[in-house]
Every structure is written in C-alpha cells, then in structure tokens.
Image (cartoon, rainbow over all chains, first blue to last red; front, side, top):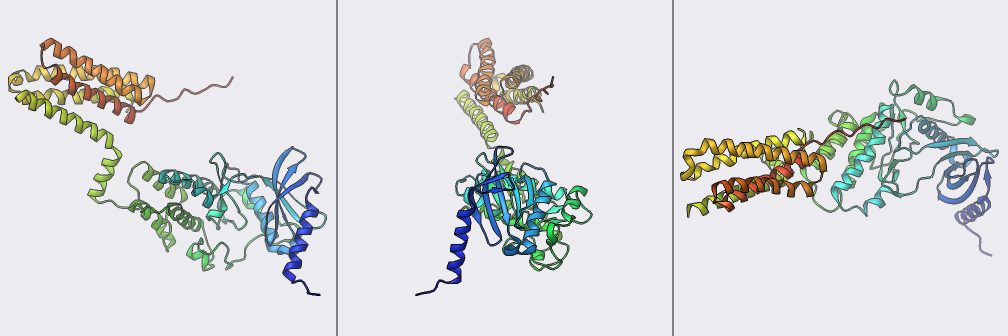
Length: 326
Length: 119
C-alpha cells in the first residue's frame, strides 16, 4: 500500500475543514457563504451578516497556524482601518475571537478586480493616470493621519465595478510616532488579544520585494511616507507600461518618486499627484525642467484648436487680400 | 475670466485686428480709423452676445454656430452698407465669431453653481 505525502494529507485535511465550515455560523452572526481566498495564515470568506442582512468579507486567522505575529497584524490592521474613514479604504465592521482561539475580522465585501487585471481593460493613458490619482487619494489621507502603508503594489489595489479604487492590506502599515491622529495611534498601540504581537520590530524587513523603497529593503529604522511615495512611483511606472513610449515629463515624475535618496523624492503624495494632474492638464510638471522648444510644443498641443482657428482666420484674411488685389 | 468678459475682450481684440487689416487695402486706407472703431464696436457687441449665450447654454456645439451666426450677421450689415465686398467682409467676420464662440466655451469660466439650501 502506497503512503500519501504530507502535502497531500494537508490538502485533504484543508478541503475537509473547508466543507465542514461552509454554512457555519461565526459568533452567532456571520454565516459563511463562500470561500473567497485562502493562504498560509488563514482564509477569507464571503459571509452573510445576519444582524444587518448584508454580505461581508470575513478574514479568519488561526494563531496556531499563522503565528502570533501575523494574527497580531490582522488585529492591528482592523484597528488601524477603524480609525481611518475614507472611501478608498475598506471599512472594518467588526472583529473578535472565536471559542477555538481563531481571530476574525469582518470587513466590507469588495467586489471588483485587482489593479493589474483592471489595467488590461484600460487602453487610454489619461484614463490610466486618472486611476493612479485615485490610488493616491487614500494613501495621502492615511499619511495625513500618520499612517504609512509600506506594501503598496498592484495586487493591493482593487477597482470596483463603478471605478471606485480601494487600497487594501494595511497589515504591515506603520503609524508614525508623533504624527497623525491620536485616535489611530492609541488604537494601534493598544495591546492585542491573547498576547499577539501587534507591531514590527526595528530592522525587520516588511513589504514585497520589488515594491519596497531602498531604505525599507535595507531594514532601516525611520521609514516614513517617502517609502510609500517610492512605491507609488513604481506603481505609476507599472500603470504606464502599456507598450507606448513614456513621455519625458512622466518618466521624470517616476524618476523623482523613485529616487534612491529619500530627500530627492516628492515630499508628499499630494505633490506627486499634483504633478501627474498637471501633466494631464497639459501643464509643466515640477519634476521636468522644460526647454523653450518643449514649452512651445506643449503650449501648441494644449491650445491646438485655438491656434488652428487663428491660423484659419489669418488664411481667410490673406485669401481676401489676394482676391481684392486681383 | 468669465465667459461674458472673455467674449467682450476677444470680440474687441479681434475687432481691432480685423479693422487693422484694412491697411492692406489702399482704397480704404484713409478711412482706417473709422473702420477700426466700427470693427471694434461690432466685435465687442458680438462678443457680448456670444458670451451671454455661452453662459446660458454652456455647450460648445451650440455656442460655435451662434458665434458664426451673430458675427456673420453683423458682417453682412457692414457689407450691405457698402453694397459690395460681401464675401470679403463676411468670411473673416464669421471666422471671428467661430473663434470667439470656441474660446468663450473653452477658456471662459462658467457661473458658480447655486448652493442648495436644505429645508
């Protein structure tokens, strides 16, 4: 008789657990409807909130499987999001601990697609840039409240069916000392249940390789909003990678946002977004000093109809002059 | 600049310029001052009407034909007073109306939306 591998046994065990849990009632309130996603630390379910009659996303984490650090992050993320109310952030409705020790968090059920998938349907570059500006809004809002995301990447941005943009996964977010809201700082620094670890030790590298600012990748202390600005620059480069050549002003914006030195980057997300908005409006961007020729070309492009009309007028005048001279 | 002010300004400037082009017609060169004043006045009145229309309808596809119609009509009266040069006067005049109509919609600021008062 052949034996099954540990991996196969694990898979069977998980599928058994999943079929067992479907339709189950969590905390006498949430009826599990459908498994949305599953990872090493737990699962995300679509659930029916029987108290309010609505569908929610229920993140359930098992501290034994996920470990206290990851579970602590879920609790921390829930507390942090509860202190930040913005249309671009997923609202947290509820959090709690089940009798068996698992921790759950009920959040708004986000319907839509990930940014990388959504971009396949957007061909127009201005539309892509406008989408980027909408990503900047909740990040700028969080920064204003002293919160740095630290893991901005396309898979952490969701675009809803009506074009609404949501920045997800604030589990590794950092609350800046002495900045932002007292409410957010207090909520996040409050002790996590069951002794769970709710922060990140200095020198620990958090984030996703390739989407982390250089100082973040080196595990330096004192990572601030400019780490998110770096990631937004990478995100902008990703959004612009549509096969067409990237104009100089836009590549300069990306270069400034992704500068190796923190001091050379945009000082804030608002400044970065303002430069992108200026480009969209046909104005000069701060990241790219223009030559006289570039300025003239930009002016002509911005006012091409008015210039064509004036030329038409001058041509008509010249034609009239020539006719009258004959 | 709001649409009415921009219409008046553009109509005036283009009117002056329109009048100045009479310099290239030697037969009327000695009457150039009167032509400039008349052309400017015509431009200002046409610009005012176009600006008011642009503010009212706030739609490029209507303001441009209106600009052509108003400026073309004014140019027709000027040509009619002279009894000749209909095409020579009306063509540039209509283009001035087109430019003023386009520019007032494109660059003019519309009225601020009225605030709704909750009862």
